[in-house]
Length: 556
Image 1: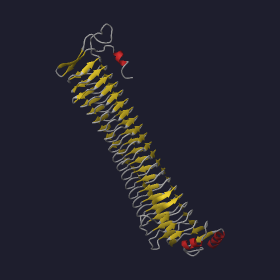
Image 2 (image 1 turned 60 degrees about the vertical axis):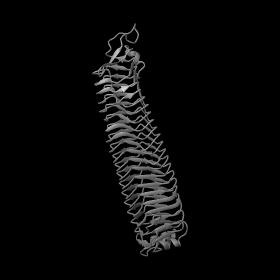
Image 3 (image 1 turned 180 degrees about the horizontal axis):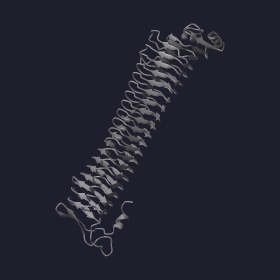
């Protein structure tokens, strides 16, 4: 039966190799040397101790998984130097080649296909692709190699599809100095360092891969640009899920990143202009997303939860970021943490059930607008941060203060809804030249507004401060502040109190004012006395008696 099969195959142009002597050749190299361009060489099951060179365009196909192992030489087990070679259905094992710039299977030509083979136990790399293009590497198992599983250097316009790459000593897949490569549906796991390393590369596509249980980063993207990392499952890697390292204008979209030892996503060293959108990031040992010294990135529509430190952290002069429409919850430290990071725009995020909501330190010229911050300890706290704009946020049901401003100058807080917090609605401490305007501050457990530590030259205007349990506004220490056009209504203990000096109270509504209007106008006949530590401390000479008049000018 076998002789008949071989005769028919030979007649149809195929050459057969069998180490038992039942084919046309007993060695693969002899068959290659005898072949012509376009021939098909079929290698039958057996063990072939060879170091093969393919120098012509042929199909080299294994049947029943023939094994190629070392012939005691330190060369690659197979080196492909001709274009358009197909290699399929082999096991390559035990290569003695220890060079970093080589591998058990080495491809140095264009248009080649490496299919459905196993490459294992190499003393160096498994598969090495160099200075080539239009390659297809698909359906292979590449494991237990000393260095890397797949290494592509200057291999462009190529596809790595559906490979299993695991238990290699260093990286699973490494791509360097390449353009327009695609990695799709690979399973990359339990490698000794990085799962997927992309270095000095442009226009790569990393899509639908499973990358898990690698000792260091799941994906390390370094000095690369215009890479799309989309819909990958990146689980339980020892360091970072995705490490973006001095890499520009890349896309991280719709990935699931869970259980990273340190950061879910880390962007460092001027990794600018990246778009990080639609990812689910949870269970990281440090932060969900950490941006470090990087600018002009977009973080939007991510779900970031249950991380050991912060949901999102910006540090070391990270600036000009857009952070919008993220859901940030149950992180054990802060939902947001900004340190030494300026000119960022934070909009439309939902920040809840973290230890603290949003914490900002030494970070100026930031904008926070239309965020929903609830169920944390502190809602939003900033310290030594100047010229910050806080507007149109809902800050409620936090167990301590809603908004804190400590030593923050020239900032504006307006048109926020601040209610049902366990401490003060707004606490201002040691700050100058603030504007608090058109906020609704109600039903907080302590004071609606508390002013501490000689806060000065602040404008409180057109706020509604009502139903707070400790009192409406308490200026414990503060000087030269203007409180005008506010509604102080139905606060327990007191509506207003002023222990400070030279504060100017003008045309506010006080629900406990008992005077009448002047000739039917909106201001009262008698001044309103503001009590302090030692009795009357100040007066409002024109208290408003028609609440609706201020409501028209106050918050929407």
